[in-house]
Length: 344
Image 1 (spheres, rainbow, N blue to C red):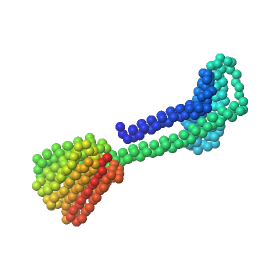
Image 2: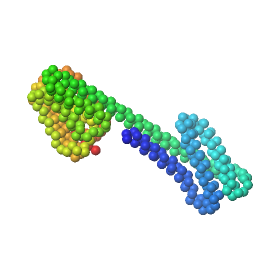
Image 3: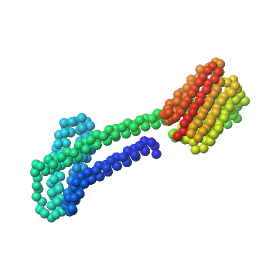
Image 4: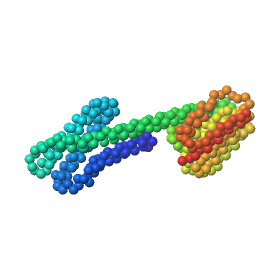
């Protein structure tokens, strides 16, 4: 279940509880003062009918007057209709009460109506209407906030998918360059590279769409990428790869570490690889420490890069806000990355 689906489901539950609360409130709000008078079926029926008309006044304002008039700033129309509603519901309410009473007691129906009765009934209907207006104003604001929140979540998810999609072609482009190099220099190694690439493609196509993947799986794909580069550079590839700690049960965002390793291989040369590249993972109970260090060639290449790293930084902000530290340092000889990630 996605976050948006969960949020919508929770909102429906809150909305249902709210309306149940309103119905219960209408029933019990005057019950302590009326309990001593509810002695016959006619008395109980009259009390129930009066609650129904209070709810009618409440929900007329809640579902119709506020959203169609007050919310659209038709203030005069709102007040005119409110006055008409209160007067009409009061008259119909008293008429219905007397009709129900006559039907239950078996007495002839005779409408008794006075100005005092009307104003007394108007007070109750007016209070119900005011409450309906107030509650609709508050819930309308809440609904608007929920809609904005859902839109922001959808925008965030779409942006995150876009960032992932931007990382993938960048990563695959460099991997295909590696295979292209091996096809001419060593076909056997090119075949091995294609097998490695197939596992990476499977990961990219089927797993990167998930918000989180097992840390074990993420590191296995990174190791496959390192193996691809080792095949390319052969004996010149001096890579210090160290992994410590327990990976089981830990989840991370996909394609989080690979771009740093990719960037290290991309912006070095054979001499730099021979001097050594350092990739270390230290996995703790609630955190991961990742470091990557490579030698910079004396003459820097004109390769365009950095898109993958920019996107990873954005993803870290979106998926691990306040739960990561990223340090990138560069001097004339060394380019180093240190990432510490706090897990949930």
